[in-house]
Length: 233
Image (cartoon, rainbow, N blue to C red; front, side, top):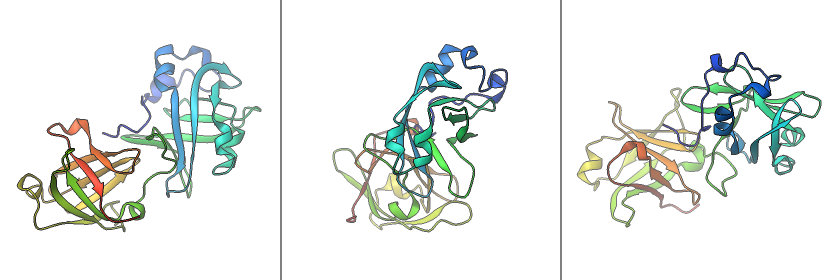
């Protein structure tokens, strides 16, 4: 499960009665759960900006701040003045004339994103991070280790994904038994989550930290693990 997706995925049926014009009718708990600061960034790894979805009423929906940070990386979003639920489980950003400047569509199990040739994702992100990781940016040599630095395995991530959205990986020959038996062979990224997988269903799920390394997802259970880059970038 990706902890860096929007905090609450709201079923479309729960919002159909509201739509962009029905801001005052949204359940306050749903509104508060959705509010917060998010990174809006291109899926291809380009620079993004941070927007804060607020709970005060505004033209066409609810107040928004942080637009000025979008003026260089995503100038179209600098025109946004408010946000609202779209009525189909997604979110919209609206300018002062109520024109929609971005529509983020619900993407089950993954962050919301716009449609088009270069989608924008709306995602919770580690502090200080201004863009999404990509296969090419994460390709290289990594180490799976304990928080105290105990090395368990060296991992080389290849940077080209196949049609299934996965890329090959290779393990060193000296991996600890509890890692070697997983037979990890491919990897996948989804927002700020990175998953190492075998071809028969075994996996390790990690989430990106502010320093660019990864920590094992809490949902995985067991002892903590880190995935730490070892090649210079």
